[in-house]
Length: 259
Image 1 (cartoon, rainbow, N blue to C red):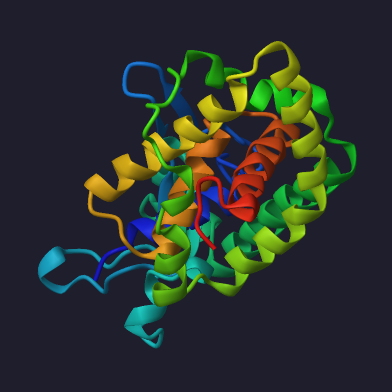
Image 2 (image 1 turned 180 degrees about the vertical axis):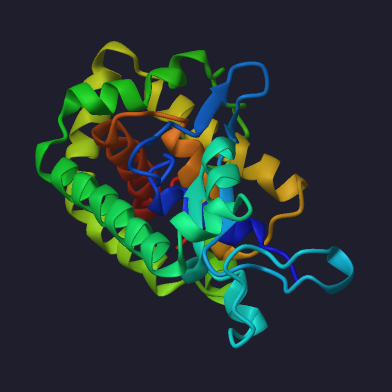
């Protein structure tokens, strides 16, 4: 059993695309202009080790034989870190001694709480400035085809059939309070650039189709992947928040996501 892509993506989002180790905090996402995609180069490190050794050799650092198999690759047992920090906490024997389970659980909790607090703070302070930075990439998106129908993208049907997690549903609900500002921002930009709204929708729609071509079909996988695409490797939490608010606005208005 391995860590699912959905779990990796959700872990990256909860970690703000940064290494959770307090002495590092390295940004672990980057937008690639050549492929119009986001590279995540963080790693999902196991807090309690993944395997007990045997034919694989030495047991994983902090292996707990009493832990059910399904919990080992769950969000609660994973820490988002860079490659260097992953090696450090898993090194034998010092990594296991210096970073026992309790310490890593505390690091995870403190880091994810810090990210959540930063995103909550951004909710009250995000402005047109952050929204402009979050959508600057739209200027490079070509106008949509005249026959392109934005109202019939079956993501919501997929979400209903496959089910979003409680955390994803709560995220959507919390971001809806900021969507009126996104609406005002789009209306303001469209006065000077009438095609901006359609290019914005087209940019998200093209990535949605790309994900579908790659085989993603569940609502949770699609939503998490679209959130990562929206964040585009931004370092500033206010811009990350602004970017996700734009995505939720399009979800709410059904211009990319169908109700």
